[in-house]
Every structure is written in C-alpha cells, then in structure tokens.
Length: 485
Image (cartoon, rainbow, N blue to C red):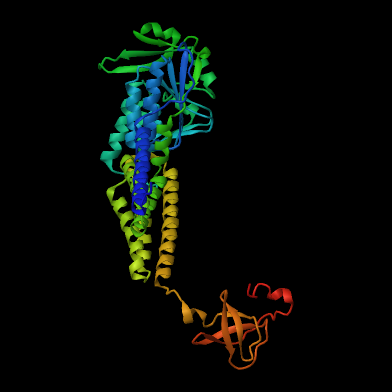
C-alpha cells in the first residue's frame, strides 16, 4: 500500500498536533496536581518539617497548602516551617498566613539556619505562626513594601493596611504588637536575642532537635481575652493549668521528623513563576511564532503559542501588568519589522521597548521583599532583556542582510575568482575554478601549468584569465587534486 506525499505530510501534521496536545495535557496535570515525595512511616509522634527558601510566590502557597493537608493525614503533632527568605508576593504571603490561621495543627516558624534571614514577607509569615523561633545570627524585619528601585512605598493607605495586618497577627499570638507595627512603618530589624527579649519570638534554637527539646518545657494554650478575641500563647508547663484549651509537647524531642519534599507541581511553578523565566518564555514564544509563520509546518507556531500561554499564566499569577506584556510584544514586533525596512531604527526601538518592559516586570507594589534583593532582581531582569534584545536584533539583522544580498551565479560569480592552470595556457588551455574545469585563455602572457590564475572576464564558454599571485605547483603530487579523474 502506497501513501502519497500529501497524505504523508498530513499524517505528519496530525502527529505533531497530537504531540503538542499531549504536552499541554501533561502541563495541565502538573499544574493541577501535587505529588508529595516525602517518606512514609508510622503516624505516631511525628513532626513535619517544611522549608521555605528564596522568594515567596504562588508556588510557595501551593506547597504549604499541600504540606498542611499531608500533615493532617499523618496526624502530625507539629509543623516546623524553616524560613530563609528575602520576602515575596503580597497575595502569596497573605495566603500562607491564612493557612496558618486555620490550621488544625500548630505551626512553628523557625528562621534557620544560623545567619539566615526572614525579611519582609518572611516576617509576616513568622508573625502568623503559633510558635516563632530564631537561630543564632538570624534577622527578621524590613517589612515596608518597596518600589523596583528599592525605595520604600510611602502611600499611607497601603502601608497602614500592611502594618495593621502585622499588628493583628501579633495580638493573635500574644506578641509585641507595637513592635510588629514598627516592622512595617519604620523597617525595624531584630536579631534573635532582642526579638526574644521584646516578646516578638518565643524561643532561640540552632537546630531542630534543640528546638523540639526546648518545646517539651512549654505548652501552647488558646484562651479568650476580655475583649472576646481568641489568642494563642506559648507558656511554661507550670502555667498551663490556668488555661482551658491546651496543646502539650511532652516527648516531642523523640518524635520522627518527616522532611517534606515538594512535588512536581511546586517545582514546575517555582520555575514558571520566576520573572526572568516567564519573560524569556514570552520573548522566545513570540519569535517562535514569527519563525513558524515564515517556515513550512505548524510546529514552531504551536510551540511559540504554548510558550506565550505559559508566560501569560505566570505574569497573571505574579501580578505583572498587561502594559509590560504589551510593551514586550511591541518590542518584538518592531525588531521583526526590521526585516522590511532594513534601516536599523526599528530594531533599536524594539530593543528599547523590551528593556523598558523588563523594568515593569517586577511588580513591586504587590511584593513584600527586602529592598536590596528587589534591586538585584531588577538588575538581572534588565540585563537579561538587554542580552535577549541584542541577540534577536542581531539575528534579524543577519536575516535581513541575507535577504538583501543577491545570490551571484554564472559570469558574475566567476569574475574575480581564482583557480589553477591544469595545462599550459599558450594562450589557450584548461583551468580549474570553483571546483569546475573550464577552457581558458591567457590575456597578457602565457601561463604555465600549476600557476594560480584569476578570472577577469568571460567570452562565451572561455574564461579570460591572468596570472595571480600565489604558490606555483611544481611537484606531480600537487596536481593530483586538480587532474581529471
């Protein structure tokens, strides 16, 4: 049975569509599910340990939500969340705080390892935990929101809302509410000793085992104040009898500590929600779509569409404005339009648009992040945009140059070319030019076999040549590659 070329092409297109559909289905499954890779063992006397490292994003929220659900299935006595973060997105931070507020299992935020920081968004999360612990040399604070330049946002309405959020959570856990507010309004920073002395944290420990050992001397109580508000508080075991609802930590130092490993969904989202990755996806996607339009088949357009789709999802999730996306698209379109004009202005304008768009990629009003880290991220984004804009401008320039340059063939290609005399030219003979044998005639003087020649004209099928500077072939072996076979 024979298949026509047309049918073969159609089958190929169908196969490509199936592959792309399968890829998008896999992505959808990854986005919608989380598979925990933690170890499984008995449900008795267990503690779940979750690590938050780096920026806090939607991926972090997803991880914490899944970790809390996993802790419930394991009947864990405590969830320890280690913090080493410069902060993150406002919505992600608030969602994690809300998860802690409604958790049936007590949460312990531990600024760890020694020397780590829980700046900005990390401090908000710390304040929402039932137990706040810091390791030696760690730092919390710097909670005022910043612009992409690193300058603090001074809008009273915005700052007061965040300060009140911090203050209320401090009250919910019987901590220093006044100082909690200063974290936001004055960018206050504290070390472990000062934080403990000022009743911002409950314990100091340098590792998990020490933390659990110290917890055995305490009880977590939940009581109602005269105002009617309910408050969590960590008290000495001897004081616990004065309260109603109590959570004891006896023998917790012997508990099995389960290290929670994020699933595929969290890993994928962590990569996707990185502003640098999402901006690269958008740039590459736009150019793939353009390449697909200019070339046969549908693979490039479909792949480009998937890249752009993922970039738009990421931009929406991390709060990037539509204006930045549009500016990126305009910049790419201007660079592509350079193929038509060839004057260079559009390529430069397009590169400028992409660089400016990179300045808008970091949505600082929606992030709670340490100002120094904010500036570093912005610098990386700008450098990435400059490199990508330069690269694609160069590619478009080369493509335009190749399109404008005429392909030289025939007489036009031969004139000026150099070759070898494969016989004596007295004045007529044979030469080899551009890999082909030609009948030739010497113009001014006879040319000996083996001498280099240069084509200066063409008369019919005869090349008009003259002697050219270069090596004269004399050995018989030198002629082997030029002799007719």
